[in-house]
Amino acid sequence: MIKLNKETLRDKIYACWIGKNIGGTMGTPYEGTRELLDIQGFSTPEGVVLPNDDLDLQLAWLLAMEEHGPYQLNAQILGEYWLAYVVPHWNEYGIGKGNMKAGLLPPLAGHYRNMWKDSNGAWIRSEVWACLAPGCPDAAIRYAVEDACVDHGMGEGTYAEFFTAALESAAFVVQDIRQLIEIGLSKIPPDCRVARSVRLAVDSYDKGIDWKKTRQLIMEDSADLGWFQAPANVAYVILGLLYGEGDFKKSMILSINCGDDTDCTGATLGSVFGILNGTAGIPEDWKKHIGDEIITISLNNADRNFVKNCTELTDHVFAMAPMVLKANRAAVELTDGPDEFPSEDIAALKQNSTVKKLWERPGYSYTVDFIHASGRVEFDEEPVIAPGGSLPVRIVFQNHMHEVKHLHVRLHLPEGFTASYPRDVYLNHQFEKTAFDRYHRLPEGFQSDLTQVPGPEHMDREAIWEGTITAGEQVDAMNRIIAEVTCDGHPTVGLIPITILG
Image (cartoon, rainbow, N blue to C red):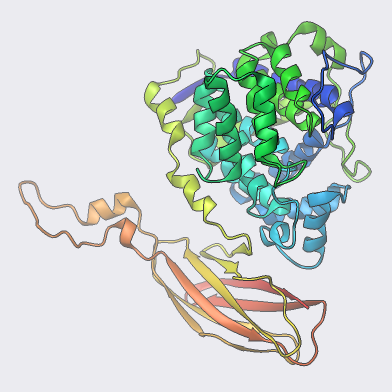
């Protein structure tokens, strides 16, 4: 069990937000710069904090967590908060919002026709999940994927938030930068572009290549993706962490001098250093320069009162963290005693069996939960239909309780639409390892040569339903089908929207 001293944790959470504000304020004036920079510090007057969407959006996510709790929070809830409280319509933000307004649910809303799904909008807002789940990267990623997929689907931008959320969460209990990078890499597909760019930065550093040449190599490797994309910018953060060699100012300046999305790289690097070293590791003159205030640019402050400064934000996050850790059964305890980081618990931070399941989530998909089970709607192609055309659709049902279920499916179709589909689905039960061991335990002294007993890895916990939707002569811009799912013995009815665009 990892043990975190409460006061040390609070200090690190506060330093995370101060570091975020420092980097965002320092980097914002140069955002979008394509050439190598040569900054030496702030270009803004003392006491002036520049607004930054990197931090803004996390205030809305914190509100959603406080109002819906760690057990329920998902992409649909975050999507609704996005529509209600996040004002900008630029790039992936606008595409995700537009798709949700057209009736698409995330991740589908963030994936459909989104040329920006590999960009920076998600990984820059991962600190809230890391601070709510300190020392538990998998828990941080559980929420990070729900966050990122709203406007990035299952693109590189989402993998980037897996990486930063894991690295930042682990930074509460791991001091070594290289170890943190390895933990982050263990949580993303090894062949994704974010992993490739991060490894390029690490390899160049190990070979003794100058930081400017490393920056050039990273930029050239990501040239096919274009500007403002996650792989290169995450790598610029890693460049700063490595070449800065533990010095806050040197690391920050190096990352920002790489150019590109400079407010994002500076802000993320500042938050990582804040978590690593607490307020004692943040230079006093830089801390004084930006103060405690948070200035927002992306939030609808007319309808809700969001937190106004880093102290207030820290109080909210610190109060919520124990509930998030409990909800995720994290092996982390908050204590009044000293920190304790058992080596076996630290080594376990790199395991990826849980997060691998998230890599496989299709971009053209979304999940609807109805307590005793859930259904993930999947399309093999864009959910678009023409008059008289047909579109296959698949629902992957997941059992949430320890009983076999017979589900009954009925589609409610727009006028003129028809569908062919199975009416019944057999859904096997969830079978935990402990239960399997208990029911298949042999008496003491007995042996068995039975090797075909179906263990948990062989149990069919999912059922796949497949149907085909055929449009009539009239197709609207948004065509909503409802899959009504009932189950004998359960009063809750699953109502799964299947939205097809015309």
